[in-house]
Length: 155
Image 1 (cartoon, one colour):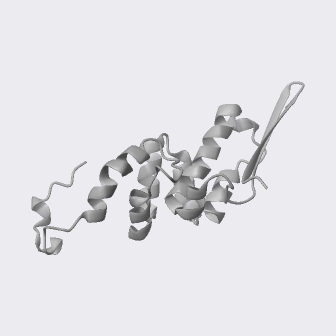
Image 2: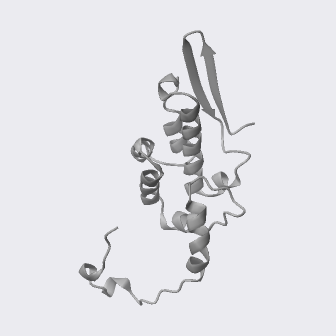
């Protein structure tokens, strides 16, 4: 059974579309393994649908939010924030703050030469930093001893 199906129906003077997400993709191992990639997989479906038809033609507008809640275990408010994000950077910012440390670690250390990546450019970032992060040993004994005003935390 396919993980999802996009139905687009053309009638005289009318276009209708609806999406069924029936479960995790049989094709994507990473969507099953990593919550960060699960969310990216759902967003990839959203973008595919929007590239094929106008969102106004969707009969089930809530398909993406429903999938984020059911498969990615997001709360409704975070899912709604994510779906109105204007680009992949904004999407990343919403998702990253909703992941716990273990989920972030998994996303950063996953080997995207083997696993699928649904976040544009993240595989390059990951490959660049994965080895460093896996071998990283903090030089600072305790960051709580640092003066927070002395740290430059501006983006």
